[in-house]
Image (cartoon, rainbow, N blue to C red; front, side, top):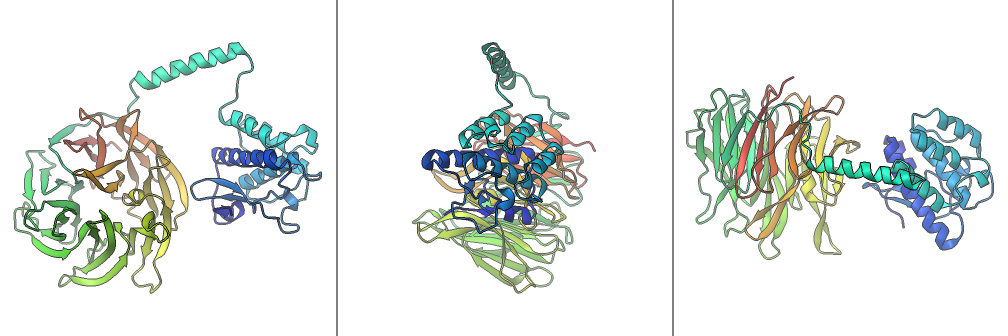
Length: 539
């Protein structure tokens, strides 16, 4: 049984491949052919876009079942099936993946080679493709092993044929590694123009007020408020206790631009006897007034305000003290226009993230229960449309809930960005979950630890500017923290900011833009201390 969709299905759904993607796909397919040819001494004989399968995480496999009559004739070699015939078929499949067009005539090697000559590919890859598609099987790679070796050389940039060239390449490689490891990086822009030190914090958040005159930093049970016009010593807000003997943590905060109020979602530690959460509503009078409080049972995860300010979504989980994990999740949707009351409830497995989209739909990440293994083993991103009357739509599925717990939605609702821990990069997808591109390698991530128990994990999330034109991605490079700023119209990186700090083993825990996107704020944190860094961003 093979996993994933066929290559034909991926292309029909609109997926497109770069030269690097195709090289990686071809190399994996060549390895599969190498194993098949070595084990059975026979050809596959039915290689086509229908029998080449590609999983969501990029793994390639071959469908060993017999193809339907005529299903792969356009991809078959001119001669009878042999290991070299599979090489030809794979070459025809690669041309199909690059052009999205099946061969016009069966077994027409000349037509395929003419197409390859017109493609915008590297010379090395073109040469390999042309040899794969030779009409004479004696001029092709003889089997999967020979093809795998040729593709590996292309992916590695070729290999020297003489010892002298090998020594030269190794020497340059050693020099490049030394430069990579020890020379300073070419940073874009200036260093932070402000730094504010803070003590230990388990949960941190950053946010600018809608008019940009205040920067708020939430750290456990307190919120620091800076006046951005003077950057004088901050005003301090202390969150009230929710249960005797239990610490209160501020897990999330948002601004209501219509009412000018600050909304903070807080809760007790999961290990506390009392599992209590609350939503605090602060007025605008220097944040000194006693807040209005809305209490509820459960461990609060996140909150989100609908863009028009009419609804507040609150994600809550029930903590299982025996299994030491979240068990049941629910999202309460409160109406804020008149009296604050629950207008709807969504129930799922443990919920790690909730966000309103610009059109009022609700995105949330939930863990999925594996009945066979009796555990939560994957994460699913759902889209809930209140007025549709339909079941919530599944958009993304991953193996790590920590990825979707840090999903960021663009202000326009066109893009979702989330960090991929396994491949260490940020992924950009559209509203239907279709992968668009990768933003950065070596994305920073870490566990959020409480005491000696790892009870919740969260990757650092990026941040969009208010107009959605910029995206800031926190990444780790050579064990150094930095921020990369991307133009979302072209998804090109335009700045790289140095987030160096004296903290040991730091992580970028929170990022936010000012409303006019002239200031970027980030919190660097390592469980013992934290720092807030501010950069001026020039247009």
